[in-house]
Image (cartoon, rainbow, N blue to C red):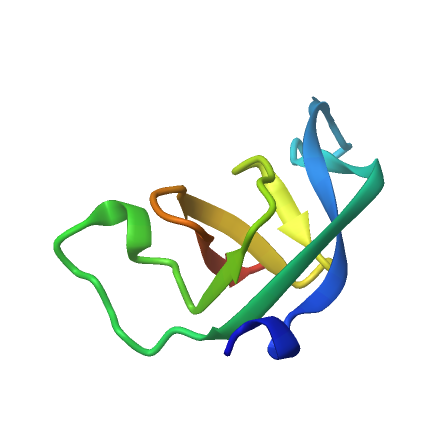
Length: 94
């Protein structure tokens, strides 16, 4: 079962403002917690540009924006919301 492996992690979203280097800044979401199970993603997709940066895959019942960064470690690349769980393809943040 997946549910015992799920952890509650915080997440932030990208704002429209940029810092001195021209990068979008992160703003924390009030009550921004997600219960998610994150595992390494070893399969490399070369025929679809959406998945090329994915190094982790996560599943959760909750829904967040694709402009989010989870736990200041994982950047959300793509969300597949078909089915009972949302599947998150995640890359390294920073």
